[in-house]
Amino acid sequence: MEIEALADEAAAIDKAALRVTVVDLYFPGEDEPRRVTMDAAAFDQLAADKPMSELLLTARPSRAARRGSRAAAGPGRAERANYYATLEHAGEPHKGRITEAERELVRDHLGTINERLAAQGQRTISLDDPEHVERYGLAGLAQAQTAQPG
Image 1 (cartoon, helix red, strand yellow):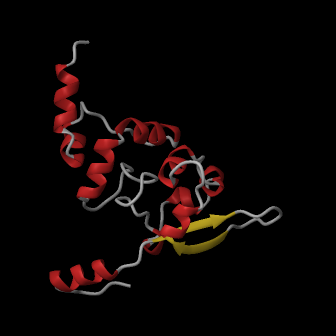
Image 2 (cartoon, rainbow, N blue to C red; image 1 turned 135 degrees about the vertical axis):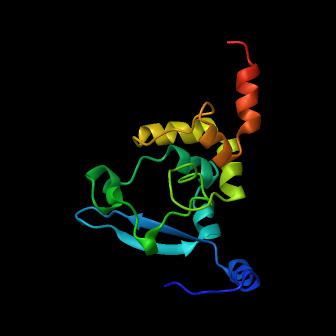
């Protein structure tokens, strides 16, 4: 659904928003996953040895993405990825504005994000591409790369 709101109203909605995680569970013998929504903090606590953010970085792509189902066609309006909140989607090409939180994730984890993007067959983020540098606020990293002998 789409509604119009003033900036302060939108900020109040954003502040009141719940932090949740959507998980597709694949059970043996079932063709389709069961989608569950749970509190993000409870999801994070399921990780025992490492923080959940680290585990997600090394997770393999979902079965739906490998099968080429609707996930490959792109998410619908209700299923859009939360690009700015997790490393799982940060840096993926998407329409719309890049938030400062996503820029920070990309700056702090560029190598890991590029590895994930390449493994998923997506374009990687290049410090040599002025559009990428501007979009993700990578001027400092690009300058540091240029300054390195090489």
